[in-house]
Structures are given as structure tokens and as C-alpha cells.
Length: 569
Image (cartoon, rainbow, N blue to C red; front, top):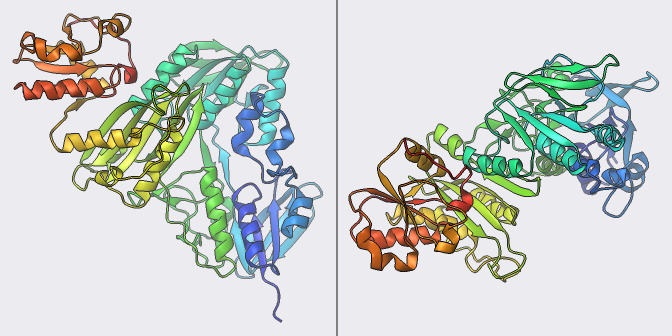
């Protein structure tokens, strides 16, 4: 018998443990060693906001398996057959000798670990903007369970009345939500003009802005933090921004994104990509055939554009870890790439996205066509139904689906997952008409919102519909374009919520054929209803009567993200 295979894994949070577990199942005899510089391993980073908000009450749940066993050195040793060294930091990789030099951070002991295959899963570190005062007491990150524990302990004292969150990405918004649920007033400062700038198009983000303002969340968008100020005891007392000046607070959460931990790989001479992360092929192999990398330290390939992107997400870390575990034990698995699919619940509003956004797709040169549709996730008569706005992005030339986004107090993740699956297999708009999706009133509508949205794109392709976005519509109204805003809802629906504008004309859909001569044919007509379906019906009636310039307000008033009042210029 030959010598046992020696596998060394650097990093013990998500990708590393997954690679170790998969490698062990494929090679029961391998010697597998995992090095983790922290004390905690294989923790649920995505669960930290839920711990802060008391939705998860037991801190230890963040480190346990689904069957209640803590994932510590004993667990990895006894259940996985993996020798775990915590508080042990890899300091150098000798590629010629195939050795990892490490040091025990508690004792200072230096160690050397020989390997046949090496896995780098060093993750990422929060980016800290060079803001004066970032070292004051009360300034936190949210990258590690110990961060969550410190934040929760501070909030539970009752002394934190207001917090400022710097950054409106997923970590910032989920952290803000957790604090808000603990009765802490929150101000969110974001340099970009919208929340979730890397995730949502501006029109979908506007709906989230609207909801957050209704929830009394203080947003300061397009603003820059100049400094954090402290008191004589070195505690945070406020934040100063360009637009708002001084904002009093007792806590600051820094959430300005993360950067890949690549120093070890770089010093070992491994190739680093233009994204700043480690270059790997679809086997997750680095530029050294004996060294693999996975998780938040690597760059990925976008499945639509083929370009390299940096997308640090837990789902990719786990999937890549499995691929690595296969390949270091003689397998031939592939990680094809990513779509940037993401879901979140922000202040009880669910958001989701996959693929390219509208602006991204246009930037890449696609002939973009979009559809924005408002729908219920279940039948309207089912008591659990919720409303969503779903946006689908496609290429008019190839009819390929490029991306989708959704928002609402409804089941949006299911819809985005359907579209992510379709994109992965190269589906075109026409293919989604034929999907055999499950239907029963507690789960869906007879025609799913996904299918409704792509049907609208199909109607655009066939010349049966011309849509206008809320942004374009608002701009036309505010500059005083001569047109008719034809609202086709009932009087009862119109009364509490409508545009205050002298171009508005109320003609209920059921009366439209009888009153069609009242509508001027020489003007542009924008049809309006609550969700868009009646407005589309009205547009077809008008076209049939010889009207040439008719557009549908996409998504209707339920998708409208702005104030309703207008003043004609």
C-alpha cells in the first residue's frame, strides 16, 4: 500500500469545511488537516442578523448542525475524520517542498504541514473606509459571530437609542433591520444614490426606498461619511456626513463591503485576477495544479457575459467546496460560474435578483427589452396572498433571458429561482411560456407571475403592447408633455389613490368602449390601473379603435415608487 494522501485546507468557515467533508466521503483513508486562525469554525454567518434581533435566541445555534451537534474540533475529528487546528494561522506556502508553514496564535509554536493537495479557503475581510474615528468604542463590523455578540450585548443594555449604518449593501441593510427590530432608530448612509446598488436596478430599489421610509427608516443616499465623532471617554457620539452634517448616535455599523484575503496566495506566487481575487479554473484549481481555492477569496465567471466577477456569497462557497472535495480526491467536477442570484428580507420586504440588471445588460451591449409586472403570488382569494413586483430583462435580438428582479411581501424567491434555472440552461422568453409549474391556491396562481412577466415581453415583441416605466412616465408628466393619463380603475379605487394632475381622465374599463369618443386621438395616451392588466386591456381596445400612440404604465400604481402628486409645468 502507498502512503496516505495528505490534504491541507487553510480556512475553516464555509468552503474549507465543505471541501474537507466531501474529500473525506470520497477518500476514507486520506489524512485531512484543516487550519483556522480563529477560534470558531463552520459558523452560520448569514444567521448573525437573526441572532442580533432575537429571532435566533441561542448563540450556539450559529455553530451547530441541524441535529444539534456543535461543529468544533471534536466534531470534525470524530464525525468527519478531519484534524482541525484552531487559532492556527498559515504564514507561508512553500510550493517547491509542498509545505504550509503555520503558527499557533496562542502559544507561538511554529508548525509545518506537508501536503499532496492544498486548499486555500481564506475568505474575505470587511473593507474599512479610512474614516476618522473608526476605532472609537461603539464602531462595529458584522463579519464574525463575535461581532454579532458584541452588537447584541451593546443593544441589550438599552443604552443604544440610535445607530448609523455605513453602507446599504446586504450586510448593511440586514444589520440595520436587526437593530430596528430591537427598537433602535437607524440611519443608513450610502455613497450611491440607491440601496443595494450592486443588486437591484434603480426602479426596484425605489420601491424598497418607499417601503423603508414608510417604516420610518432614515435613508441618506448619495451621501458620504466625513468622520465619526466621540466623547471624552472614547465612545461614539455621532457621525458627520457631507449632506446631513452631524447625526447623533451611540453605535456605528461599518458595512462597506468585503475584500478577498489573497495575501497568502499572492506571496506564494499564485495568479491573482483583475477582480483582486485568486484566479481558478472551472475545477477550482489555481495556477499551481496542486493548489485549489474556493469561497470568498476566489473570482468567478459570470454565466451570461463570461467575464470574471467577484461575488462573495455563502452559496458559492459551499458549492465550490464540494467541487474541490471531489477534484482533490480524483474526481472531475466543474463549477461553471455564477448568476449573482441573491435573496433577502429587508424590513419585512422580500427582494431577489438573478443575472444581469437592466443597466448592466445595456452596458454590455445587449438590445435590452424589459417587462415590469405586478402580481399576487397566490390566488387573490386565498387569505395568505401577497403582492410582488417582478421585472424580467431579456435580449431582443436572441430573445434570451438575461436577468430578473422581484420585490414584495410575497414569495419572490421561488420566482427568481425559476428564472435563474431557466437562464442557466440558456432559455429564451418563449421557453418560459411552456414551463409546467405547480398550481394550487395556497402556492400560486393559475398563471404564475413569472409567466405573466414573460408574456408581457412577448406582447412587446409582437407589437401588442408598448410599456412606459415609472421613471420615464414621471419625467414626461413633470416636463408638461401634452398627453392623456387614462385611469381605467373604478371610481372607488380611484378616489383614495390617484395622480393629482389636470391631464388625468377617469374612464372605467367597463365603460371604455361606450366612452371611447371622449378620448382625443391626437394625443399620446398613457393607460393606468392598479397592477397593469386592465391598463393593457384598455390599450388593446384603443388600438382596435384606431389610436396610434398608446402606452401602458408598467406594473400599475402598485409598482409606483414615487409620490403621486404632480404639478404641470
